[in-house]
Length: 315
Ligand SMILES: [Zn+2]
Image (cartoon, rainbow, N blue to C red; front, top):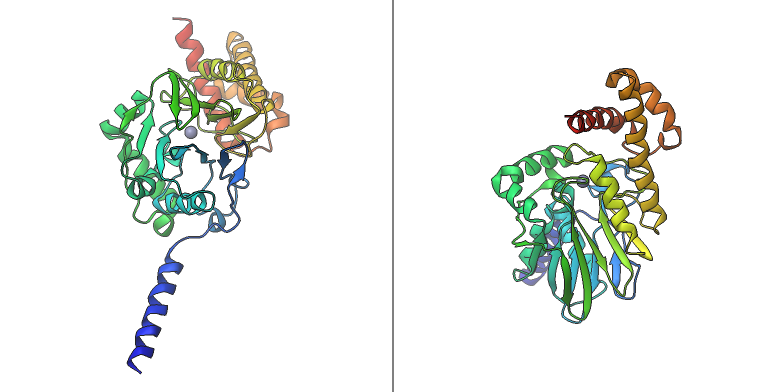
């Protein structure tokens, strides 16, 4: 009888523990290079009950020495999910985590990975480390706590990257990772990672697929220049910040968008139009992108920001 009770208790504890972990059964690591995988999310406006706040594309490369991760996600639970998915591919330890920029949905999950592998180097743009150390970490924690809700965000803490990235080729476990830092593109903290030999480029949010990101920390001219740098790698596979990964056409599309936004807004600015006056005219020029996620929310702020950039330029 006693053994039976203990067994029942054990089953109960095991099942409640299982139930507490959020599940993403529809996500599997997708192989995109000989040793490179991406855990690619579904549509950006996926039902939050399915996404649990997971909207980006963590990647990982299995090297001779261990696993190199590029971007994580926005919560502790998502970090644990990433660990489980990596374990379906390899039992090697995580040695490095590169973060493409300081928006919380790309690094708040680092906590779970660092907890499991405390020796992992967490590498990010020096400006990212400075900003998070100066209080931006709290901003992102609050913002994502609100956005994801109690269950999805439970237990999440900010683990600030410990290693400033350099503009150079990192040799890790027989694989070359070309890291490029940008001054101001999508934000002031962007880096791209090109995994040589694998032919895979991770662009962060400088490039997305059928999605418009918040650009309030960025600069449109710098973002366009970053797309032109990205094209020089001639990557076979491009992992974007949000949306399905694909080929170089994704970079070309975003380069053209950044360029067209600036050109059209400049034209109306030179006709002395105010940002609210030009808005319907700009929207009409971007008819083909109106269905993309984020368009309705972002187009107004994009116009105001480009007007400010033009004003600065004319000083
Ligand atoms: Zn971003």
